[in-house]
Image (tube, rainbow, N blue to C red):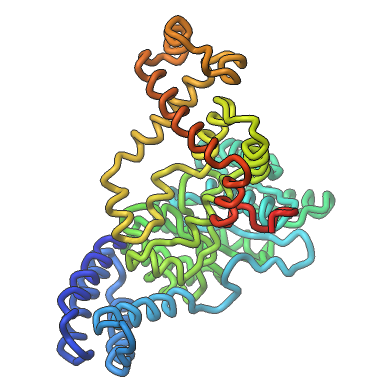
Length: 456
């Protein structure tokens, strides 16, 4: 959806460049393109009609000011209406409402395959890391093979605690036992992963209604696969009728059709989208921001998320030590080079970074093979790790015999070792130029040192 809609809007902006004002005619031209892009993205027809009507009404009253062209002004109106459509709904948006006597119970609902179990663990990770909560997870899914063990594994990765259950137990007994344990051991939050089905059925709905009645959760989250398209709408309707939902979690929003389900499911349920799964990693869950999501849909990228991802992946203590080392004239060695390679890896995958760039930049970046770039990073790390500590500290010792040994240890060719050493020498030369505070000035300009003691 994102690329289709942004491509169509870009064409409209170009064709309207020579026009001086917004008219009935050029609004109709643009809205035809918007309507087609939304329908192709599996946005439900009633949602498309509502959005188009709102945009038409607002656009005709929109003044074209300053440097804006009519096309740019119309894109601005579409952006505002997308934000309004995704940010409405009763309940607390922008995260969970945990204002309850601990433990605050969160019930996870949805079809099998929507990603409930993984999302439960990701949510646990978010609560542990971002809100410093003590979190317990439990699986009431006694039907799907290995569901309980899966939750145990991913909960451990999330840094939360898992409550044991077994397929022989009744879901209601499991939930009550977990709630009792959470109370006695002073947990802040209890996340309950429920059973899914391959299709909506009465048994599933009765079971989850019983769990809701027994647990009285403060949050009942509907987990839906953003790639489902029209199926997501039907599922949302059924769950809305069965349960008093408080929020939506969209999974797999990094897929091709992101945006379509977000618009439709929010509209059908009348509750806010609270989180979006943005990658398969355990920390790949974001608090849903309608404005940022609308920008992605319109091909404007998500620069805020890009900055957050880069900042989270950078070890600022290590950066400060390196700056101090270079400033003192101690030099830049292969250990420092290895640290830089690992920092790049820690930024969460280059393809994930490129996905957040605005349209033109993302298109250019998309021409690069990101998988190849990431493989190259891993190969370079392997080469440096094949060196001895002495070799890393004194790269000038690495001659022909040592190069052959390093290449064999890393499973690469000698020319790969030569290429890495050449790159290292170039970076070393750059670092020498930064001696005497140049690096600190550069990092200050980049904002990297902001907020550090003594760094201004």
